[in-house]
Image (tube, rainbow, N blue to C red):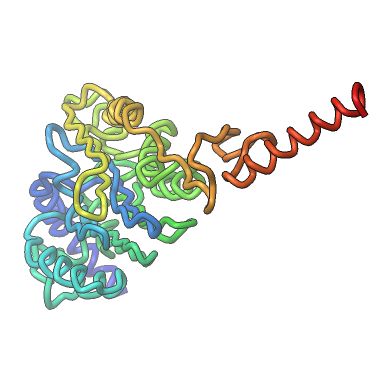
Length: 333
């Protein structure tokens, strides 16, 4: 009873504090992202969207990348986080496991400064993946309270999901998103038949848009001024980098709320993919250097196709013998 009555008395202060916090959330206070790492190719990357007009969601959330190794995504409260990201970068460069990175950067001793009544570590959200197949996620325990008192929307979702599928490690996370957003990110990435990490990431965010899910502030008509709801966000991105740090693909759609940025992202991605088709499967060991025939992506050699020089000689000799036998049998022998 004492706790309940205390909370009731504090609600006005909490609400005011929440409004202040959200007024400072210039970039990624409501976002959905999915990060991935390919243990086979050592590519890392992410895709996501948010309802923040005229801002790069990539710049706000793609926080720390160690090429060929690991990736840290950071969203929700993005203010005063320099020391947090510096710590994350140092640990990832050392090869620290993602769960240990999360534990370190959410330590109150590092990120316990207060903005109003909310310690920063309680209102942040992270996802970490690495090319060893290790993953971790974090959703601040006070995010629900923050948004419940400051955002006049039906109950939104603040959650994360992470794991592995095949050669891919992933972490999906969202805050102030519709109920099935994070689940859709995860299930689509896991169930994707895409040929590489970029394909899977694109399919995941595209599925959120197609399902009518996304950042709740852009879904509810009239909630965000100037936004032509319902759309999943105002900006969206996809970024995948090679082990040497060069970009495989980088698309950053910065929108004003008058169009669906995920649809624009898909259009630009498809144009990129047309010029950079999926890599062909590796040929089996000892395969010939001349082209095979293809059947649904699998290498299938016709029975008459020679597989080596010795086979060519043997088949030629057999052909000569058969020809001589036929001639002898029919005319001379």
